[in-house]
Length: 432
Image 1 (cartoon, one colour):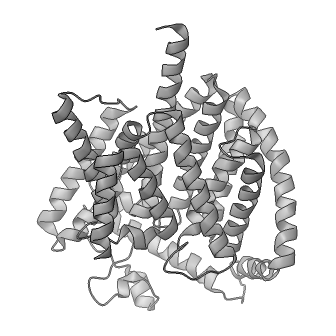
Image 2 (cartoon, helix red, strand yellow; image 1 turned 45 degrees about the vertical axis):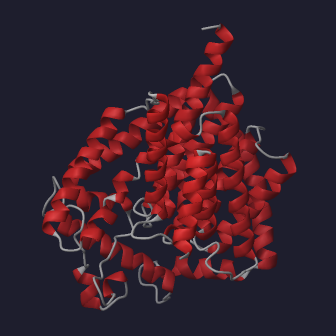
Image 3 (tube, rainbow, N blue to C red; image 1 turned 60 degrees about the vertical axis):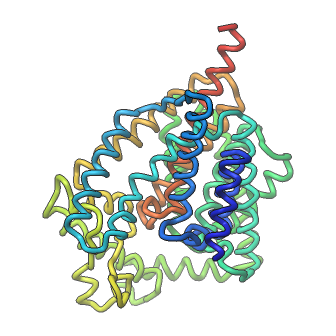
C-alpha cells in the first residue's frame, strides 16, 4: 500500500509539477532510506518507475508540442553498443535461466546508464543543478548525524557511508576552491560531520574509495596546472582535517584505533589474531577467485544475466553468504567489475570500461579549458565522485543496485549538463 501511494505521488510530481522536483524527491528518498525506499514499489524498484515516468513525460511533451529537443551526450555510440550487449545478454538469460525477474534485475547494471541520458534533460540550468547538490548534501548530513548518534528509525541511514563519502568529496573540493553552494560555515561543519561519519562507520570500502580519489588527484596533477594547484591546497587542508579527525576519534571513539590495529595485525603472515574484518577480506578474495575461475569458461560473452553463482570453495568451507538463502540463493562477488566480466565477458567489460575511461579523460580535458570557476569546481567535484564510486565498486555491490549504482550515471549526466550550460553561457556572451 505504501509503495502504491508513493508511486502515485511521484507520478503526479513528475507529470504535473516538474521532472526536476520529482528528481529531488527521488534522490532524497534514496539517500535517507536507500534499499527500503527503492523496494517500496510494486513488481519493480522505484528506480525503474522513475525512469519510465520521465520517459512518458517526454512523450507527452512530444504529443502536445509536436517536437522534443534531444540532448546529445558524449560517446553516444559507445553507450548504444553497451545497450546492444545488454539486450543480447538479457534475451539469452530469459531463454536459458528460469528466474526471469532475476535476469531483468541483473541487467540493471547496464540499463541504469539511462540516467546518463535523462539527467541532462532534467537539470537544464545551473540553479537546478545547485538545488540537486544542496538536497544531496543536506540529506547526507542528516544520515551522518543519524549514524553518529546511533538513531534507529525505520531504515534511515542504512548505507549512509556511501552518500557521506560522495558528499564529503564534493564539498571538500568546494572548500578548497573557495566556491560554495552553501554558506561557508555550513559547508565546513558539514564536511567535518560527513568525514567523521565515514570514519566512524568503519566501512573499509568507503575508506578505499576516498583513498583512490586521493591517489587519482596525486597522479592527475601531472596533467595540468589546474590539478597541480588544487592538489597543493588539498594537501594543506587535508593535513589540518586529518589532525582534527585524529583528536576527535581519540576523544570520542578511541576503540576505533584498537580495532584498526587488530585488523592490520590479523592479516599479517603467521598472525594468530583473528577478526571478523580479516575473515571478510579472505572471504572476498576466495569469492573473487571462484567467480573468475568460472567466468573464464566463457571469457568472450560471459554467462549472461540470470545465472545464480554459488562459490564452490566458500560452500565447501561452510562460510556464510547470500548463497545460503533457502530459496534461490546466489553470491555476488562484491566487485562490480568482476560481476560485469562474469555476466558479459571481456566484450561487455571492455565496452563498459572504455565508456567510463573515455568519459573521465574527456572530462579532465574539459575542466582544464573551462573559464567559469564555479562550473569548474562543480565538475571537478563530480569527477572525483565518479572516481570514488568506481573505487568503492571494487570492494562492494555498488553498480548492480538501484540505491548505489545510479549515482555513477547521475554524476556523468550532471557533468554533461554543466558543460552544456558553460557552452550556452559563452555563446550568449559572444552573441552567437
